Image (tube, rainbow, N blue to C red; front, top):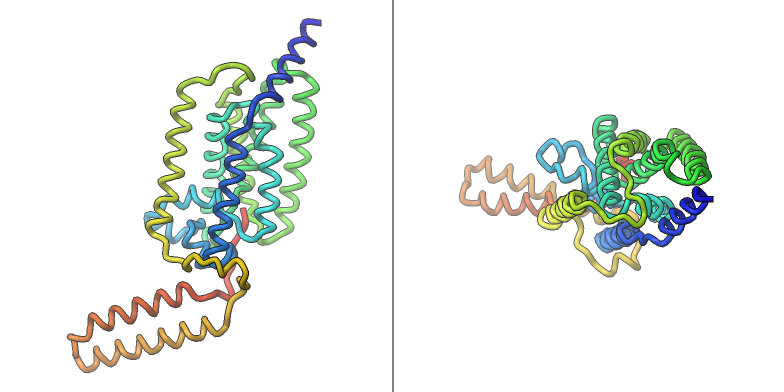
Length: 309
C-alpha cells in the first residue's frame, strides 16, 4: 500500500512538472527555420553555410562554433517536421524527469556529440539537424529505465525501456537505408546520451534544483547565444527577404550564369591590369573580384550533398 502511494505521488509530480525548455527549443528551431526561408531557403547551400551548418573546412579554420549551431538548423520542411515531432514527444518526458537545467545540458551536449561524430566520420559532407540531440535524449531515457528501475514505478521504467529500444532500432535502420541521413551523428548522440545518463542524476519531481546545474545551464545558454552571435556577425549568405516566402527556392539558371559571366569579366580585367603593370587600378580590381566572388557564393547551387542529422 505504501509503495503504491509512493508510485502515485511520483506520477502526479512527474505529470505536473512543466517542460518549458523543451517547448522553447521547439519554438527556437522553427524561428531559425523561418529565418533561413527568408534567406533563400533551408536547402540553399549558401544559406546553410551562412547560418552555421557543420563544415569541416570552416571548423578547421577556427569556426568551432559550428559544433553548436547545426543542432538548431534543419534542411527542408520534412526534416524540420520529423525532428520537431520527435522533440515534442521525447523532450518533455526527459525534462519532466531531469528538470529544465539538466535537460538543457543533456540536449546541447548530446547534440554537440552528434555533430562531432559527423565531423569525424563524414568530413566531406556538410550536415545539420537536431537528430543527434534527440537520439541523445533516447539514450538518456534508456539508461534511466535501467539505472532507476528500483526507485521509480516498475511499469514506468519497463515501458520506457521497451519503447525506447524499439524506437531507436527502427530509426537507426531507417538511417542506414537513406544515404542523406547522417547515421554517425545519430549513433554519436545516442552513445553520449547513454554516458550522460549514467553520470547526470535525475531530479526527482518536486525536489528543488541544485544551484550547480542552474549555473551550468546559464553557461551553456551563453555558449549557444555566442555561437549564433558569430553567425550574425559573419553572415555572408543571401539577404533576408519576405519575397523568398512566396517565391520558389529552386535554383535559377539565369542567376548562376550571370554570376559566372561577372566572375569571368572580373578575372579577365585583373589579368589585363597585371599584364600592363597598371598598378593604380589594383584597388578597382580588388573590388571587382570581391563582388564577383560574393555573387558566386550567393548564386544557386545545382550539385553537392548536405546530410541531415
